[in-house]
Image (cartoon, rainbow, N blue to C red; front, side, top):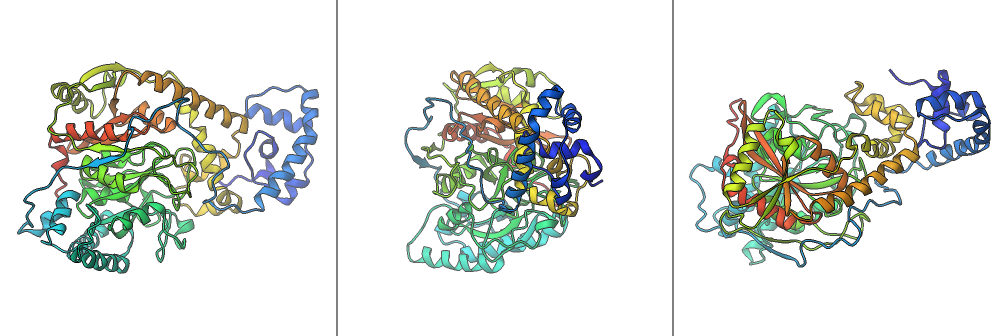
Length: 557
């Protein structure tokens, strides 16, 4: 039910307390007198206890600030405008793990075009690139193949918002012309891909998965899109996301898991993971704030990379949380993640939170992890959960590969409570929905959905938001200290690490490690800040020693 603040004096005063980030101010509320009695009632909700005399001293400030709130709201600030406060995940004096840029992937030899072209659906980027470079298949042919596959399975899986066919065919023809004349841009040249529909693209809608924005057009290309196309990749579709980056329900329905279409694909990078798992895209771009790459990758059995906060420019991406949002690839393999990441990482001068850092990756020769010190969160591996057997076998496999396993624990901090950072920032990012009542348009309206979250965010005291960010500073320093003696650590895909590492900004790779009741199971490798090179190399060695990423859904629907 919609809040009617005129009838509730407690909520009225909360709207104007100096601790508050915003509220629903109407002209009548601006004229309503603030009294000591109102302050005394409101303070109970935010856990404070001021005397009558102390409350009386606030009256003038509260009246003045209420006018300031109203003035600021008249600016109608776009979602694209970031606060003049940038989150920096780097501890004091931190040295980047990689000291120089270097990138080399495995050589693909004797790649042959399969007689059954349907097998192309599950080829890796390097395999497809080998076919294109050797001119066994053209980008136009490959693009048509994947567009038709997207169209074939989308009616059931509901993973695409827009199919960018006209743009794609133009790019594919350009790629073929360039390759024919000897201008080969690299492994992504001529390779089709999709992007989560929170990334802006010219000439096509950018809906953010929401009824409230389903007709929105943003006349620009996001930096990630531009960089992929500059590498020669071909955009063929914009993929679904749970409305405003939560879950797998969007304005067109619920995106499905291709392993079991009775299940959703999880979110919020729902369409990206579903389409890659179904062999309808070689790779796609997702985003993560609190699990939106890890969760759908686990559900659908894909391999995903959530980079360090600041590694990839978010210019042109919908903002949910300016200090927690991260863009990253969802692919068929760890090496595919490395290839896409190499093309999109780095600063662009447009996202002030982006951080320049070296990236050094070489595909590991063989699968030996001798000399690698890998932490494991012992307390979480001791628990019984749906994928616990597979996770335990992963530890055994890592030890067999020569890694030294080190018991490890996260800093003892209140991670769930620190998530008021996300709540406050999302409430600010979508304040216009709350103020205009357009939040009533959103598909999900239950207590744990965005509309209620955006409304309640207005009652988070600014002081507590800052305190939560100070707690993040403690997390960054303490986690950095704990990781000094290890190269990286492994953890269950779902657990406290998912919250901790998203708050701290650490990178992780999520990859398949078995099956549970017929569905894929995954584990996460979490690396040093801006240590994606070593992280990807270790994850790749493990994946080369296993076969789980080679399993694909039967698509018998």
